[in-house]
Image: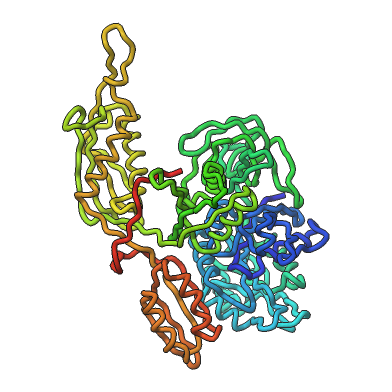
Length: 638
């Protein structure tokens, strides 16, 4: 028996969770198919998910297909919860991307497929809702090839399209795309001696290498096409790899709290075997934790086990300090960030009877489940801010605080989350016991601009042996933390910081007395002086605030273009291409993140409800409209 960790991904409302229910029913895990509308599905277990009919948190369920055990991970489809999808991608062996036969390729569909291809995750495409009026087959295949990826292999045809009697009929082809990657198949095509066995072998090999993507049509409601999809999952996607006898190594992709408030870490094991009572290092600090219990997913339920081997997904208890993204055991290469970070933020306003300490604790718990909300507390103003992807996420945070913690909150207006970029180079230094420096530490720093996307690099121009390593580490850690708030209060994401001077007071004491902290340098001295030096260097270099822009694409009736363009100008959107084809038009360009939600709200009225829009984060551009956006700086990360 082999294992497969499978992700189900889609644009919201494409039928992803309904397909999960149908898969579980087809393999005998559940007797009755749950309904998203009725809130009775296996994977949407949160009360808020059931009420809103959307997936907010990823969920794991297991089933067997002959000799294959599948750990299926259902992920959110709404773009406001893309961070939840990102955490799952790093632990997958394969994926099923769900597309609606009616709505077709949508904004999130494109974002997901680009990422799956970039990560080379073997992916099957399931076109759902063939029983719905307006469902398409040939036209949708063309759209998949044009707007998603040309590397698709249709796995059959559809009859009675758009009716409850719609059926999927298996038949591979055309398979020209397979011949592009297989010389033997290409030669067979030229010589007209192609046989089914040769095609099947190429299909399996190329799917597992993520070179092609088989496309199935069907319906999660009627079950059409689902048996063929299950066969594809079993035969075309690769098994999980990893040596159970190797060194222990796993990745935490989800953290939740149990009934007693204990942390539970969802972990994909990539190597070795982890057992209860094992002590395992995790996170950047390599803190050791004691595994007190292990749960694995099997046959649609969670079962307690004494161990979990490589390839499996498990729930682990006992790792109190664990965080999402931590590696257990042997460190693994970080995969980096797949999707753009949040570009919006808001201030949480407690209700009149809401205890602020309880609110802070509740928000901290939410940040454990979603670190990208980036909880920040302003001690001076006694305000807490969170980062967001969109308005729906804000509504979910509000509802979660009310339902799970009994806390009433509102929010201030959502504002764009800007960044600061260096204009030039700046240097500063504070010397130990000179010029009013209150800290027993010498620190000199030079800051220089770095290419966009390169992150923060810390370098040394001083000898590593010039002072204890712990002091260097204190400076670097403080530099990275301080760059979270530049001259205008925004993060400074891309720069090089070089330490140019260092010095300290060695351990000293008065005669016949022990160590005297007032005469000797400590890490606190370096953590205290570094922000002063860095702030001065930033002022000398200068920074410019950049606001987030989103790329958008609007398709609408051609006769509405005249009404649409002035509104785009009003919202500071910049059309880059405008195209009219017959009765339809298409406008592509960029719009400030701060105005994106308003554009989405106004589009139906401007286009008689026929306009379609997709958007995704584009880039940061210098803020030139109005006063420079400013965010108060005396904050600390919670």
